Length: 292
Image 1 (tube, one colour):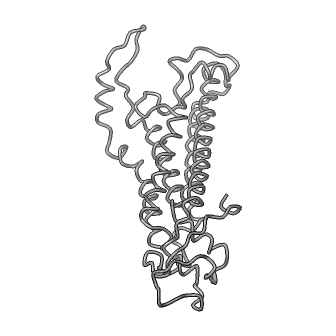
Image 2 (cartoon, rainbow, N blue to C red):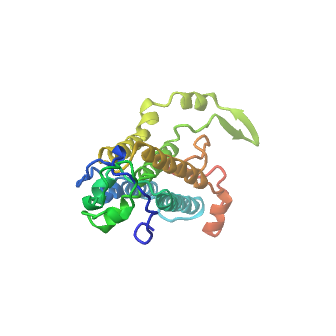
Image 3 (cartoon, rainbow, N blue to C red):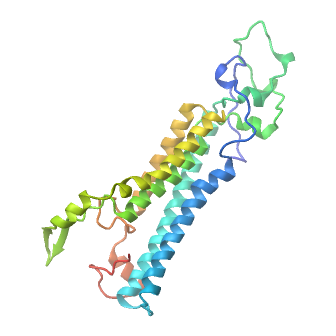
């Protein structure tokens, strides 16, 4: 959509101070760096994590044949990895489409728009500085693509992608670490009893487990703020883009995974019976062979 559709080209005032900032040649986070930090890095972390769990489960323990409960556990592990990647890429794509659609619809000039426009001084009436002009006065010194891109200030695409990618990673880390998991209720012979030990352990989770997963959010915040420092976006654009990314990651994650308060928050939102069906049979693992 970015390369095949043009934004609405609004009229503008060359005296508007909010769009008279210089054009920054070297961005702090260009598209390549954005993809490395917010897309490839999470995908790498997901892959390494599930590969290590598979290695620990089936190599170090020497289980050998994948049968019965072990077979179902393997499918559960493989399915969790598949769901993690699927949810991440699907949500990322949806956020990208929504952001680009709004960019073209809102068509707000970027802070460096006048520099991209390069107004033809012969077409400007200096006796009436408050008059609005259209794109016909622009010489486009940085090329046609960057000129048209100058109408795509809101919402910030970098902020949207950064907060989706880093937000999804944060939620996933909390889920795998079971930071907020409620394991105080255990089932014995069909009755529910309170496990005070598990409840106490949940209340005394190390501070590292609570704060470490938030580090990706700091990366997203750095990327978002850099867009205002490079004069690519106004602060309102960054806030809107960040909100789209955060809402997107929350909806997508909870669509595919159990709630962070669930005792099975580290697993995909699919029942054990479904795993048995996927595996072509197998024993009941309602008290499953947990993969750690």
